[in-house]
Image (cartoon, rainbow, N blue to C red):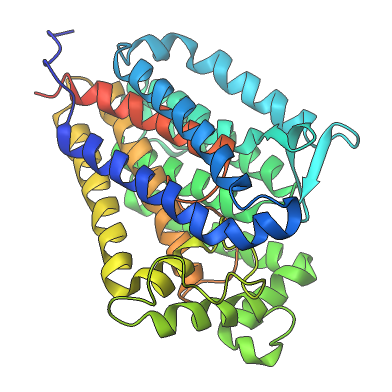
Length: 365
């Protein structure tokens, strides 16, 4: 490899740290009422978020200074470990149920979410596989089917929890890597049709998913049930207007909007900081993704390029789904806003992934 640049991508790092800072501040504002009600401490959630933010920053700076091609050697064993964790979490008594999904391993309030590990594990493995066998990717059976089977198996295990939001991010980032590696549009289009049919089957197989779809189309059909979250989210965003009600002045966080510090934290941002605050967050995410894709284009090798596409794609897909849900453009899926929402596994692993992306930027041509 060529000599590393003296510094990683400054804009990417600045956007990441600003989003993280906004996240910590907004987690406090969004969770203070809930924290005091449940734990008698208004700072309960933000103190934990600060802890994970510090751990995440340390991990980001460590990854930023470890040559990214080192991870190519460990991609296969890392994926195997992620699959084992996804199987273990499904075992009653070992997997912890939170929010209706058996997605956690841990003791008490501390835990890890194996599906979050699988996202970065899959990105690393696909980047390795397709960089080594890129000449086969235009072949349907030998090139395209193997990575899709691996991705589909991981998606299936995540859906057994069930966790449609994380599964959708995994699939979205994986397909971006596969497309970038040179897969034929005709093959992907055919598989997209099959995927849509499969998604319809998943929705029809679980009544609660069908309720979410109908609630998405018309939340007022069931305002106290399936449509409740969407309606309360709109009640938060609407009054925010241009400049918001002011920091700390949200009304919806008073036990009206469920999960205000996690899945729906952007609703509180819109309510307290208005269009200006919401637009600022989106601009910072756009800068982060743009610099990530620029890093992918300028990477010195195919592995680095595909790895950068995967990480940038993971951020972009997760932001699109979360914001889409919050503003009523997508059905409720239950997924956090990267770097902003409360959450240990998701925050730490996102910062770790961005650290790898920053390291790739140090070798940009």
